[in-house]
Length: 314
Image (cartoon, rainbow, N blue to C red; front, side, top):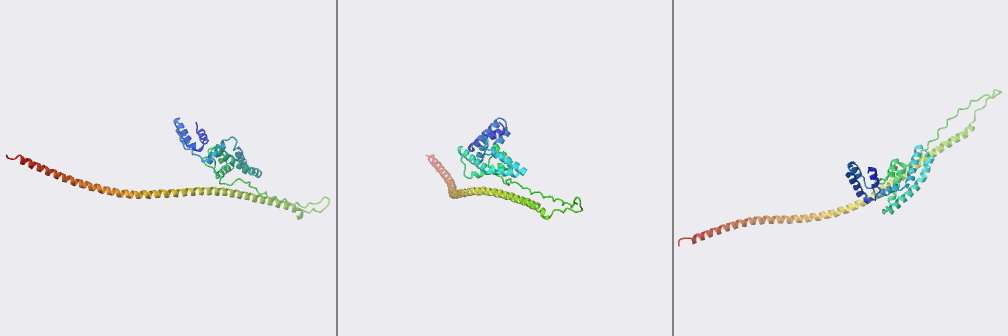
C-alpha cells in the first residue's frame, strides 16, 4: 500500500467512517514498518459532506469529463485571446454546471447523505473554480477535497485588441499625360471620403468591442462579489448561531458556578465549625486526661494509705 492508494480509499468512504478507516490504515502502515507513511495517512483531514459528495462525483466514470474538458478549452481560448472560442465555451458553462450540481445532490441523497439547500452554492463555486483554474481542476479530478473550493479572480473574458491604425497612403504625384504637357490631378477630398468612413467604422467597432469586454469583466466581477457575499452571509449566520449557543452555554455554566460557589461557601462555614469543634474536643480531652491522671494518682495514694493502716501493729 502506498500513499495514493490509501488516500483514494479513504476519500471514497462515507464521512462518518473516515476517521476509523484512516486510523486503521495508519496502523496497518506502521505495522508494516513504514512509519513515515503512517504519519502521512494520519495527517489526512476528514472531508465535509459537500466535499465528500463532489469527491464521489469525480469517482463516477466520465461524470466530470465534460466539465474538465470545458475548462481546458476555456483556458486555451483565453491564452490565445480567441473571442469566438471563449464565447462558445461560455455558452455551455452554466447549463453544464447546473446539470452537475443536480447529479452531485441526487447521488449524495441516494447514498443516505442529503445535502442542505446552501450546498448548491458551494458545489457551484467548486465546479466554477475547476473550470477557470488548472490547479483547482486537478484537485477536483483527484477526488480528495476536504472542503469546497472557490475562485477569487476574474472569469476569463476575451480581450479585444484595437484595430491597427491604417497607414496613410502616399498621395500620388501628378504625372504628365501621354502625348501632351497636361498633368493628372490628385484624388479629390470627396474621393477619399469612403476610405475615411471605413476607418472610422473600424475604430468604432474596436471601441464597441472594448466596451463589451469591459462590461463582461465587470459582470464577472459582480457575479464573483455576489457569490462571495452569499458565502460571507452564510458564514455570518453560522457564527451568529454559534454565538447564541455559546451565550446560552455561558449562562448555564455561570449559573452552575454561582450555585457551586454558594455551596462552597456553606461548606467552608461547616468546615470552620467542624475545625472549631475539633479543637475544643482536643483541648477538653487533654484537660480530662490530666484530671483522670490526677484522680488515678489520688486513688493510688488512698489505697497505699489504706494498705498501710491495715498492716499496722496488732
